[in-house]
Amino acid sequence: MLKSFSEDRPFIDITKVTKVYPPDIIALQNVSLSVDLGEILFLTGMSGAGKTTLLKLICCMETPNKGLIDVGGYDLSKISASQIQSLRQQIGVVYQDFKILPRQTVFQNIAMPMEVCFTNVKDIRKRVDQLLESIKLTHKRDTVAGKLSRGEQQRVAIARAASNSPALILADEPTGNLDAEISEEIMKLFTELNAAGSTVIIATHDESIYRNTEHRRIELEHGLFSRQTQKKQLSLTGLMS
Ligand SMILES: Nc1ncnc2c1ncn2[C@@H]1O[C@H](COP(=O)(O)OP(=O)(O)OP(=O)(O)O)[C@@H](O)[C@H]1O
Ligand SMILES: [Mg+2]
Image (tube, rainbow, N blue to C red; front, side):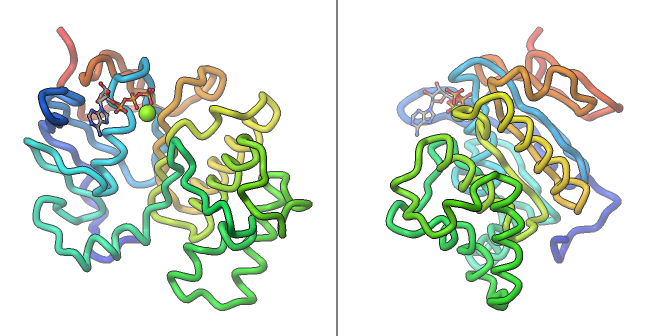
């Protein structure tokens, strides 16, 4: 749980946010969205719709041109450098391009977020072994990550994002290189992480992982929310007319 967060407000509150990349590429237009603590939310939409941009704004990798973003009680327009660091330690990100460390072993990659938080060695080993089992890569524990297939690297990236049991997991196309059976295992892992307390946002093209879901799905189209499915009432504006 984030320190300054009080549970009577949305965990993530995005209000009228616009993001324009130079010179004039409008990635998001006046979007508003609330995400509750403990939700699993799917963000879908065609390539270029703005999914990655929205995730980057939530984890402070990009800043909006207009609008407000509040994450776990932090107003990102006013957040200090040290608060960004502490917020980031509580967000596990699965990057679309993985960002694994190719010269480090699978174990070292997955252990990294826990080492940053000074978790003790015994707990790190236990957690990494548990995650390796979930992603079916126990046999690659000591392999240098650069030698793995793309699908295997993707699974390492997912385990790394999850290792610290973060308050929030942002997963950008987490099943893009995985076959159906492994994708199912990965979704099971996200569900377990969610049950253990992580709020999870998944940006995806992969219809198979959200087709039968009971969770909320928001579709982006050219930087606007074009469609939503919802399990419950949600606060959402910026819909295309
Ligand atoms: N760093 C950047 N500089 C300039 N334009 C960018 C940058 N990042 C994204 N864009 C543009 O912003 C728009 C939204 O991109 P974004 O990566 O958020 O889409 P996406 O929905 O994640 O797409 P994909 O499904 O292909 O990953 C696109 O038009 C993209 O070309
Ligand atoms: Mg993307």
